[in-house]
Image 1 (spheres, rainbow, N blue to C red):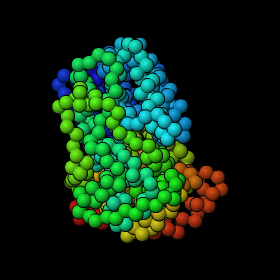
Image 2: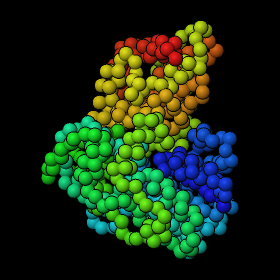
Image 3: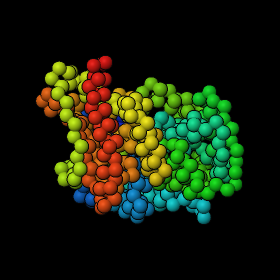
Image 4: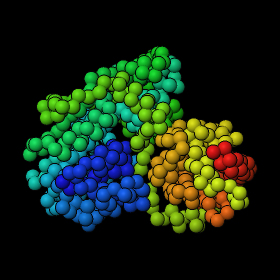
Length: 473
């Protein structure tokens, strides 16, 4: 069976890929925006097609000869995501029909259309309707609500609120019902859909026990061994709730607002097709899903995170902008007497719970300011305490390029009046650390000059601490 997987670098896609690639009866092809972002499994028999769903020629290359295609694409990070999602889905199903694809499997969100339905959920529903519109291609539309797993946005929000706030002042949306589901169960339903013996379009609503959001918070506290109290108030608006989540959880304001808007209405199972067609799958209970997620985090076994990118960030324009950066702060150190592998290992360990060496408090202040401005802040941390891969987040940075024992390039995702990068390079017998800044307007220049005194101490300390830590390995 020839299978196409889109969104292979995303939260669900990366986990599904790990399952599909080991199936002997499957020829796996992935469709990604930039092949350089697909750094794993290069020795595996995985075919890579580069492009996106807005390019029909690229879609034809991706879908040619495919039996079943997974559609795991959305554009929530873009302002005009509704229009983009609509065009993307239409292009995909049109080309799938043209190429003779037999089945499309789509993961959407639980919910029904009504006056309270959020724009985000409406877009996900519309995507499913477009994919199901073909008379020649069968669509299996799997719909999930709150996904609980290590690295999922929903779990990160709930976990951070529960861990940080012994007493929570909660808005009325905590009384809304939902049917959460473990991420492993989501993957199981998606995988099993490959082999389903059914030839018509099918909507499969999946979820475990129906429960209110406040029950999820209290069960999360129980799983973590914590005692928490919730005080409901009637006056907390969507915007205020979004700022609240932005402040206390890893998600930025834009993501928090999209999620909060979706909490106005219930996201519960509307049909019994999961039990009817997938009777072999018994969803994990909520508290067991939480315990499993916590275990994976503690054991550094997080496969993917909500903040993983789809590869679109590796725009070739970045290399030009780095070269044209108006401001550069560069530090160099002689590493003749050092082990280069240990130096790079120390470089890869920065950030997250490991911190930024002696000036952590300055980084934390910058993170708080960024959160207050609606940015990502430092609370995203890192997936693994000692390993990095292309495209994932590292506090308020994103890994833009990584070449083992040679180079690590981080792109700033905090709120700045311009574009910023932090680069570590090992060249011959030198460790070169460079901070690049491409300012936008006069405020960008004022920003750079105002931080120069702190940069002097921070950047000097980083390179010195990297060398010092490499000796401890």
